[in-house]
Structures are given as C-alpha cells and as structure tokens.
Image (cartoon, rainbow, N blue to C red; front, side):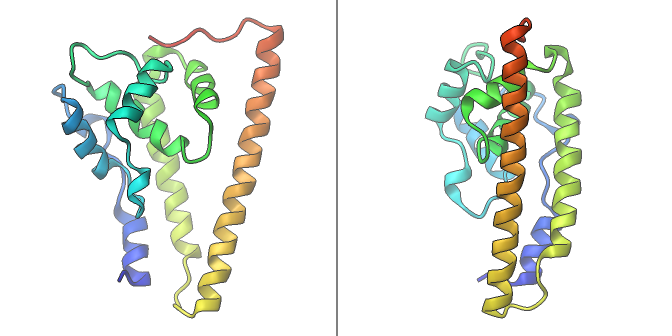
Length: 176
C-alpha cells in the first residue's frame, strides 16, 4: 500500500522523458507500449495505451502513419500527449488541437507539454494532505475532482470557440 509520502514523491519526481532522451531509434509496437508505461504515471493500468488504441489514433489522424511497422521519437512524443489529453478530451477535440499547431513544432509543443505538466504536478503535491485520515483524504479527492472538472469545462468552452471560428474561417489543415 502506498503512503502519502510515496504518492507525493511520485508526483514530485516522475515525469515523461525530455525530447532529447526519447528513443532516437525507431521502435516496434510492443516496445512502444512498454516504453509508454514509463511515460505515463497513472496508478491505473487502463490509462496505458494498447496496440488497438495506437492503431485507432493513426486511423483517426491523431498520429502520422509509421514507416513500416516502426514508431519514431515523434510518434512517442505525440502518443504521450494524446494519452494524457484523452483522459479529458474526446478524440475529435484532440485532433482539432493537434491541427492547430504547425507540424514542424512538435518538439516545442512536446517540451511545452512537459513544462506545464511539471508545473501542475509540482503544485498538486502541495495540495496532497499530510494526514491519511479518511475525511481529510475524501476532502482532497473532492477538491482534485472538482478542479479537474472545472478545467475540463474551460477546455471544452475554448475548443467550442475554436470550432465556431473554424466554421467561418479556414479550418486548420491536418498534420502529416
């Protein structure tokens, strides 16, 4: 059983790899899935991608097709961000968001993602209670849940605004 200190330590230290430390050789699907377990830090196994999910992301345009059956650093960076965003947004909303960034900025977008995640996880650590009293934990869980909901609602409103504007202006072009 994890202690509150274990949880705080995990939230403080575990982060996805930097762009430069992502594998610089192409990986097969099973290697990618194994690597993703180190990229994502959920305590729930259902948060990790499956081969079917990755294939669907490619089919739906969230990720570019592979060269043969091998996945590049770019695939891993994009899959990492997709898996996190999928916890909150629909596939269609993620696709719209991905299309908003020029294709040649993936490295910068990935590093910005890491920076935001690091900042938010660092802030969250401060809100994890120091006591494991059930009522204190319940209060913290409610706070984290409601904050997540509020952030999700804000993101959805912003996505809806982007969709409305795309209806009157030229929509973004898909990234290859």
